[in-house]
Length: 444
Ligand code: UDX
Image (cartoon, rainbow, N blue to C red; front, side, top):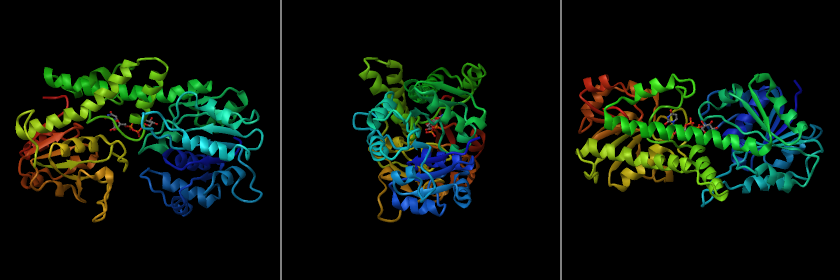
């Protein structure tokens, strides 16, 4: 395998994981980010995100001299230190947040391209790994104004909480480029994984990313809608998904009902794809319904809580204290972005409920400090402390540790022994023996 000199611009989930993993594969990597404080911390191996194995890889990369962190993109492209040689491959791993209309904002991506376009040696390969709509590689090519630098789309499919594993054990590699040279340079970086490699044009590669995320979102909205129907018909969603999941065309993965899908990717990618479809004159009603079903899922969970606490779908939650177990968008991450748990909390707060919440990956904000994402919830540092005076305990994130809670002592602390388990995580028999009434999704 050729060891390449690689620059990675942007050190979020995708950039840092990509940089650290490529260094672990033997490449010489320089990562750049405009966040000076973060670069300071990374230079000493301090990783802010909860990602198993990432901090070790970063420390090993620094110790081996194959991984370095600089402040500006130009230094990373030029090779950080005197004589270390310019980058042969440059990865763009920049944020593409939603703009007010729901479209992907490419400002950061285009700014970096402008900064580095004159700094790239002929034959350098520029790779976009940021999630960006179809046509982004074409726009980068235009902005670059150079034919001696191929531009490649190489989307990432890593999940938060298993980013390193997903990078090192990919289901597939997707490489979209209009020149064989560019495609070959990038796919060679992953050759040792032996994963299926989809070599295609840039537009199709860009579409793969959105199509994959929107399909996952659709699968989840389907299972959440199915769970609602199961409740009405007296079927058990767990058995139903097991039954359909044995069909290899469906698969068992991604069939767990919940309070909705969230996180930093699925919601923004689904909306961005819908906006692109609309601009192209495609209705894409299926995607519209997928997003609408997800929004409604949070309301459905609030209705379920209202029913569990007041016995009626229109009962008041004003002044009702509720204990929330889980605040992050899924277990295994500290990420609160677009968390369905916080989406439900916002609706409960609007209904007048008083919320006390615990999450193993969420620190109690310092006194007086406001964390906008947590504005609706009083965060405590121990799961037991959500119980006192609670009319119901609501499980919103599937942290395995919640199964092992001392439910018998929790039963003594709550004012009513009611649990709403929106992840179907808990052992119903254990809770019933402790005197709780359990409400879950998709089962009577
Ligand atoms: C997702 C894609 O999985 C990944 O391939 C892409 O690169 C980035 O976006 P991630 O954001 O980490 O990854 O979240 P994921 O693990 O996919 O979960 C998304 C949401 O769906 C979470 O809110 C999760 O709780 C929910 N979910 C997932 C369910 O409700 N049920 C399931 O069975 C799986």
